[in-house]
Image 1 (cartoon, one colour):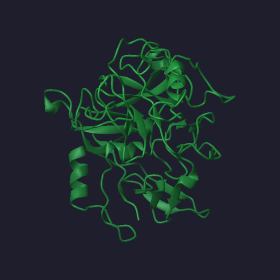
Image 2 (tube, rainbow, N blue to C red; image 1 turned 45 degrees about the horizontal axis):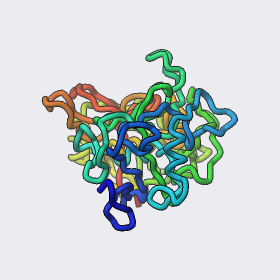
Image 3 (cartoon, rainbow, N blue to C red; image 1 turned 180 degrees about the vertical axis):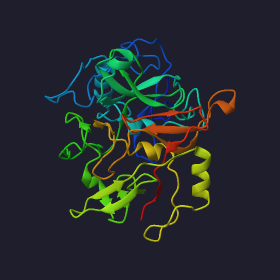
Image 4 (spheres, one colour; image 1 turned 60 degrees about the vertical axis):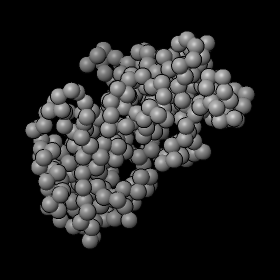
Length: 347
């Protein structure tokens, strides 16, 4: 009810995700789409870079930071705060992707819990680490999620998109880590918090590694590469990543073609959210921790998640994640072979 109250349970301004523990702002359809008349209106749009944008206060930050959404952040955190909380912020790309529902489109979100969500792009708090002037003449870019289909990419910061605030009892970037040296041609930006540091991963020295944030166990090397342990206990992945069609990849997994490692034979293709959790947004070419996952090509990797777009289902097949700059998208080319990296539930 637009005239109800949170305390009486007759007004719904926030929703908690019991899986992640994150609490989200619910957008409103009350009033007009003015950033000041109703700061929570579903049609309010902003240029990127306001308060809580990552890197905004860092002395080495790059690109323009606009102040457009400051009214939303300040208004949500003033007084008793939105839903009684005063620590609202912009979500990271992984947090924002966590509420994307890849089983539907227009919008790709559960509208029962997130009503008034347009099928449009929503900004994350993360800048992009690579300029896009070679594509769209956009030297300053930032990351967003499109809730028409759930794609994750980046675009010029001067473009106007929507925003949904989040809060939690923890910060994903709490206790920042030292940024490692660049590996090979990989470029790392120090003004973006490094959430993919070496200490995040437990290396088992047998060709597998566990991501302590997600609990997932990954193969260190892409399929087709050979793993070996170096004298300094680092890993090496020699050879080229094998590329196969989606049909072949699923058949190989379903038939348990891949050899067991350390007794585990339940390797599978990751879904799109699992695969995207490996994308390190503070670096590119490749956008992954290259110490933990050496010799990862900056190419498309395929997930197990089917795409569900279009009236003609033959147009689409699966979701891909590209590890040169770390974006994810569906593909309509069913027979195009792509790389694969296998995963299983951790120990």
